[in-house]
Length: 406
Image (cartoon, rainbow, N blue to C red; front, side, top):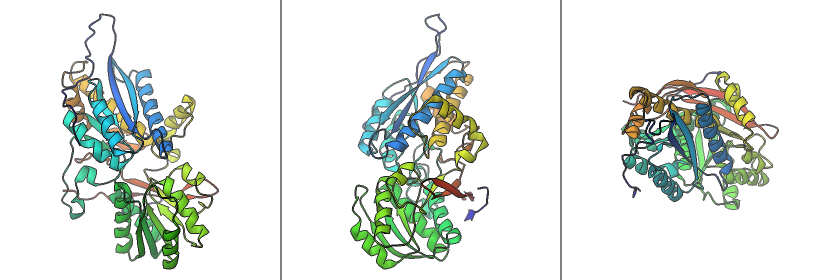
């Protein structure tokens, strides 16, 4: 249950890579270089989120270097574009893993892309940490709903909580806070969207809500006449969409143009300023996102100030804080590995960084950053947002009760 508070494919070359050595071979006091790779959709329809991820990781790397966070080490960010495509993500993971200086990879955005990258990272022993993946299968396996949870990849971590948490939050928020008793559920058939919609349905119906219809669309669809007709005929209190903003924006507008007087609700894939730009009738729609709004967190004040001062042209968007924390977690793992090896990077640095990630714990932008035995974040805070006067406004935050994952 929710504790509702007002606080609101492989084919990769297996390496024993370790990064540049910490020894000063030149005698000039030069530092070792540790590369942090990044994979995100830097172009295409989801680039607003991807650019925010890249910029936030860049800020973390620059901060670590400016304050000499790891003595004797200079961090370098190497971003690659996956265009939100699994095959591109796998190619990027293979390319990054083939560079011995890469000790970790931040990303990806999409859960479906993560599925194509996980085995590459595992085969090469390189840490992969996502600030945005929410599908439970990635960490706990396909039988997590039966409470048969098994860690899938020892090299995979994330700073975003799962759809087991988010979808259930959405279902409970819709029933208890929005007072919706009926819902029409649509998903985009992608890993993320299907999982989120399923979790929403489970919680909504558990509480007494009724699903009056379901539909599957393509994430590339922009004409929803048939769906609108079905949804209008069902006359729900709420339409829930499992998917991302490029499709949900037009869907919402067409639903309202078609005469359905019900808000659209979705998850963090909808929570973007671009959703509002794509939808002239976004007013009143809802979206959830992981964590609390960084603008409400004292711990995020410096991040927001530094991001603004850095002059990035793109917003940090939904995953700015969690990306900074994911990148910082890698720097802290490297820091521990160096400290344990008398101030130098060991020959097996990649393996040591993975081991150290399991013990990482610090106060980050989004709050306490640490990982459970599956590599999932221990921070289960979710926030519900509503579009009000062309802006997303936080309406409610809650922490999901910790599951018994024994």
